[in-house]
Length: 313
Image 1 (cartoon, rainbow, N blue to C red):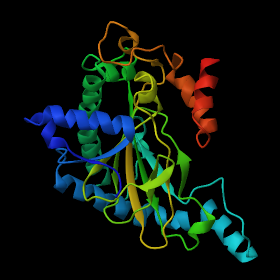
Image 2 (spheres, rainbow, N blue to C red):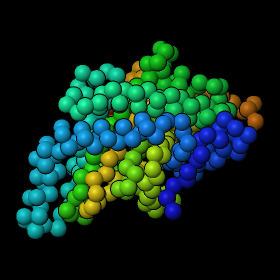
Image 3 (cartoon, helix red, strand yellow):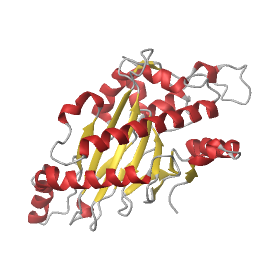
Image 4 (cartoon, rainbow, N blue to C red):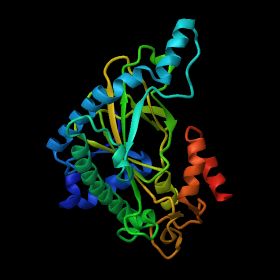
């Protein structure tokens, strides 16, 4: 079955109203959905797949084979132990951002040029998705983006996490990526066309985020939950290791600036607004940098205590 799929081209046509209503429902009921016909060219996406895969083989694979998860798994197998490795993930990962472009992989031909082009396109798509959330929540256009910028134009953080999950000989003994919610705002994921592994928690059941060629998976992070005063929720998700196939995952995070103040949007708390969540604030007001400090220590733990901890700062 998998998660819902939205034809994003319909937001600009005569089916706009129905499509926005679908997105609103999926944000409320799922926190995960896939976009097709999202406007990013297949040619660019094919280049992204190519350079990411080549980069792993050329610049990352040898290091992964000597990495901590591989060593720990080998030790468990040698001891014939029934234990499971809980504190590391079967993942090779690195971050791309505008701030660290001197550290981007440099040996893979076309990597930097392709990923810069891809990130620019994805950032535009992120803006469109956030504007649809604005409209669906009854907020002014640009509200979420402005909240994330924290009053300084374009100060929000846009990072891209390039991950590979190599085949694992003993998937029962290790996590590919432990269950967590995402700390930030909106996540735009370009995942593997063929190799599955990503799952999200829906009504207490782990549900596959099905591979769908050239789709972009959208999921909402903790800050969208706060801004929407809980109407949209961040959702637990994980990656399960596979014995066959190497899974590629390129997740881009549209997050608030570390200096941005985040709180439930005041418009949603105004009793004069019809048909919206007329409610008291369910979340504290905080500076996103303080939240990240808490999150980095508690990422793989339940999210509710994070909100309590940041309220006390």
